[in-house]
Image (tube, helix red, strand yellow):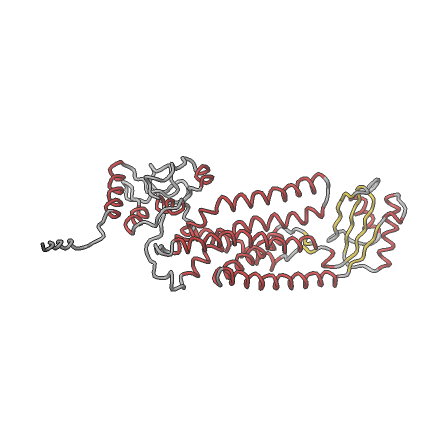
Length: 415
């Protein structure tokens, strides 16, 4: 497909996105992803070292009471704790809802069974309810340690199985890139919980394990298209950066649609389930899912794909293809099903000089002239004369004869 026979290019970035006409140079923007990821990882490490995670009672151990909230509120609960010699510092006092009605959940650190029974009676008296209506629960810290051990074991098994599957289905380089992106998502998610001091509960751990699937899904979608394009362009020998860029542009709309359709229900759980209905457990689960989905969509674009391109440089099949990667209209032609193009047309598209001698910038992130308002990285120049020169250079390159020497004269047949 050439510029003459391809469909008309949509004038807006959103239109090009919906029509599959984007030409975003993802490899050229890999440094942006590196800076963001390094910054988030540094913030995660710093937060974990300074303030750690805000672990719930299930991991630290302690005592919790559920007191009916008909004539009882959080301030009353704090008063009962103070009257019985327990400090409210470090305690969690929350108003929650259930099918049986609203209640105040009071959580403190490790206490003896006697203290638990005494506070149960004190809460019942303060709330003016029978003692049997106040639930008390003593949790040992060993139970939380057991959950953590099982979660780590499940994570390691999952990583090994996924690495083996991707290596067999695709190749080992893709397996490394996918695992790095997946670990990146989990670490960033844990870091966000540490930075904002969200409470880590068993539903949070379950959500962390669940987001591994979302992170892996986006990456596999990209890698599957990369594998198809490897076979498709094998004979034309483009650089591997082109394979990544073309594949990312082709699946960009699909990845965004999948992420959006997955995030909307999770946001609904946060706003409706937690905000309106008061289901705190839903909030704990949905918050971890939301964080994981966002980081998963990000890592498949800015972590997994650029890392694969870097690893592929060690592959003898691709390492000698050192022509300039396609940008602008040359990349758009490949995305829309066109040919690789010649070296000269790629260099012309990469340079795209303006009248002032500077490279110009397009709408979606390529390099184009200020007058080139319609392309993501197009080669539009600032004057008709410059555009004519670029078109003439491209056409002269494509019109080169196959033979570099004059043809031999035909022999006359003897009669």
